[in-house]
Amino acid sequence: MNPAHHRPLELRSLLGHSEWIGADAPLEAVHRRFAENGRDFMAVLDGEAILGVCARRQIAMQLGARFGFALFAQSPVREHLMEKPLRLSETAPLNQVLASVAARANEVFYDDVLLEGASGGFIGFIFVHALVRLQTGLLLGSIEELEQSRLEIAEKNRVLEEDVLMAREVQLAMLPSGLPEQDPAVRWRFLSEYRPAGGVSGDFFQLIRISDQSAGVLVCDVMGHGVRSALVTAMLRAFAEDLRSTAADPGALLTRLNQCLMAVLRQAGNLLFVTAAYAVVDVAGATLSYGQAGHPTGYVRHASGGVELLPASDAVAGPALGLIPDYPFETGTRPLLPGDSVILFTDGLTEARDDAGQEWSQERLAAEVARDPEAPGRAVLSRILEAAGRFAGGRPFEDDVCLVCLETLR
Image 1: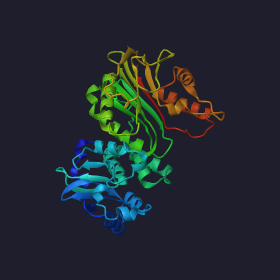
Image 2 (image 1 turned 30 degrees about the vertical axis):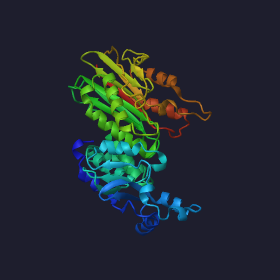
Image 3 (image 1 turned 60 degrees about the vertical axis):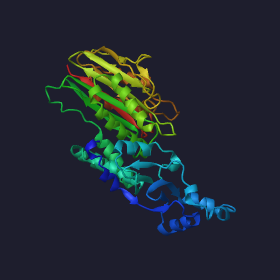
Image 4 (image 1 turned 60 degrees about the horizontal axis):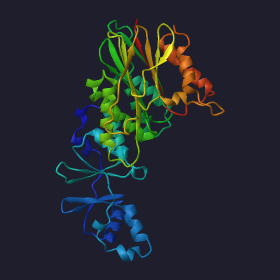
């Protein structure tokens, strides 16, 4: 996402309502106000200062309990505020807004978000579905060249709910397609296959062009599924774009990604993590660099035949992102010959199951990668997906599948 889009007016434009009540209003009056305005949340103000938020469900439970009306009807609402409502400033960056919503517990995920001014004054409330719509609108501005692909996806998923469908289209349109093969200056080629299992996906990959001679590919798998995971993938994409200065060093990039993720999710009470793998090919330097964060290890496919695991020693194979603050991820390196290629994937591929519940496994994947060393990368990716699909009896993959290849040209 482009930081230029993160303007305060964009958050104000998402306001769903601006209901508030004075801090000394008795609960009986608060209950009547909720019945009149039809809202689920109101701000509680002491003059112009925001004391917190009151919820219709909480007030109704207190007054509806046995002896509740007698005990609390005249009690001031200031004594019955919600615990830790989500309050955001209109100047908050959009990455922070999306991350804060994604980090909330399930039982409060769809609660209204209180928006306050730069000086702390009350502005109103934002509905969560409005934030999803905003994310969609911002991303659409950068994907005009993939509109045809978006339309094809929309046709296959017409039955999905409108907001979720739009989020899926945007995710697919964001994925890199590599450079035209006819560009004679570029000494590498990027190929990919992507099979989301549901409406929106927690799998994500990004191509980072470093030069004509070198490029990196990042593959991530966010814990869970649905809108929450989709919000995190949008956040990761923005972080990766901001960290291009570290793109040549996988360990440094993963270290900074982990720091960025931990900074925005630190307030979360729920566990949320992201597995990631990042590989860089440098044709001029004849080297491959690799870093790993709790992710399945990818492969080097040699032009001369044979397959090896990427350099993921104990030092290189770090924990998933979002678990350990300031963890120093390491970079593994090895020589790279012209025509060699790197293959990365997510576990939805190797965990495809047959009728007996047996997994396809990384061993079967390695065998497919090694078969027919003369085959071009595009054919290898297609063959891998076909083999895994046959193993699963032709059924759709149960989990998201991401499969990418970064080739060096001879």
